[in-house]
Length: 410
Ligand code: FES
Image (cartoon, rainbow, N blue to C red; front, top):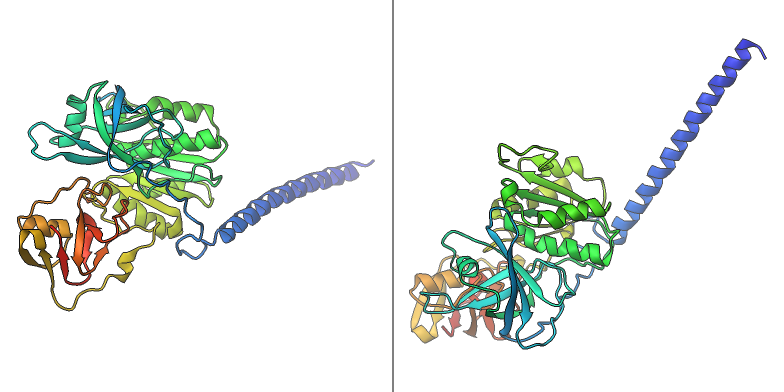
């Protein structure tokens, strides 16, 4: 063979190789595209409307009212010792009913110096299916309940606990990829969700973004980092907004700054993720609209803010869409107190308190049922579906507002 023939043969070989490589790459991308398209269309969420998928039904309340639980153990979860976990077992020796990862427990506490019981809700921070529940509580300066838990509650103490509840939860039996985003103490329901996913389906793709100020505030560092090492499907991204001087990016944390949309867009592959977000209001107010602007369908964005939510829910039917703005001021009569006042905005609980009427309240966010009050006349609207389902003929004052003139038994 001549030198020219040999050269032509080599060129042909190279061209053939490049062509085969390009074809293989194209087929791979095409398959991924077809699969992605099929999943999006199959889920009916390609138009930005809420998902057509049936949400997982929360289990019915496992018991009514309060049940005694004994504190089996108590342990700090962070180096700053500001987040403390309490493992609780039924004091009556009965079973530990299941819950959905993301749900919370409601506690009724006798706090020194308080005339009335203090009611508070705390997210479960362990996966379902254990022989006990676990909540993890951050100490809040001047927080009645959190300081009581940290300073007064001891192992062996018995606490009054309502059954797990809450609409913010994940289907841990599903297979679709999920992104869990936590800020500060918002990590508690996310740890429950991640643990449940890994337990039910270890190959399920989970991306976990966790924002804290520095390493001393990082809770559950051991399990989270352990999961990331052991499971190739679990991707951990810890962000320190104000790293300590001796902390190094890449060694002690993954990214400097906050968890934000820019980071998510940089890191996440193109997939039909479900996003679960839990953190302080400022984080939610930036991340949730950011996800929607990015093109994530509303039905795939699920979130929970601490305290009264400042964002309308997107993942549940929103009765507030029917809220009628009254043409003239509405009157609210607190029948038991003999007071009639005009409603000009805000929640019925705010209105009652501003009128000098004492109402029992706990979470002030529609979660605990403590402010449940009988409606004698009229109708009540909600800004968003409350987590606690009020009994027929009653309403939750903390998230309720009048639709018509109202008479309340308060
Ligand atoms: S105070 Fe908890 S539901 Fe109203």
